[in-house]
Amino acid sequence: MKTKYYIIAGEASGDIHGANLIKALQQVDKTVACRAWGGDQMKAAGATLVKHYRNTAFMGFVEVVKNIKTIKHLFDFCKADIKQWQPDVLILIDYPGFNLRMAEFGKKLGIKIIYYISPQVWAWKSKRVHHIKKYVDKMLVILPFEKAFYDRYRYEVDFVGHPLLDVPLVEKNDTLTSKYNKPIIALLPGSRQQEIKRMLPTMLKMVRRF
Image: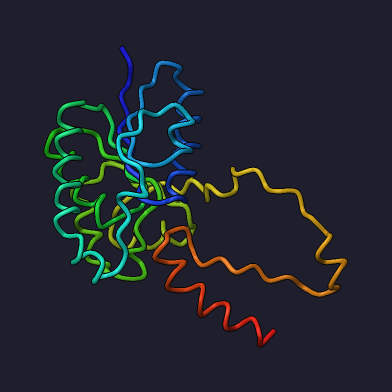
């Protein structure tokens, strides 16, 4: 009998980490079945893609309010899909606004809940820890200090290291360095369209200062 994993990621980085997680699961068990909310990476890794993150990422209060009906539909659709597919394990990757609700829903159905990449509760909305303790069976954190943070709440978590360390590095190209003979600064506004639109213009204004 196949072990069924339902994986939810809401952005490009989560898609990458989810894809690597799926590949690791397949190495342990060739019969795993994965159904996912994610992107092209997770689909290529073998998951049945239910929703693409391009259609599920909403950032900021105004955008959430403008799309409240769409967001409610996504919640309802996800709950119905989970209930119909009946996974053995629900794996949630960051994306707390959506995934913490799914954790509660899945737990009430008797599904094992694993949270991979903790919400940044140590930076804001620390009260969410109580929700996590109640509905998440296992939290996997990627930053060393996160374990110490959760220890303060008497909640045992596993530190598994940052998944970017498992992503193959692009070979360094010294062409630009030799051309300009100066340090090179990369501007990385984020993976979401909203982040790019909001932050890249300001970042580009800083270029003249360097």
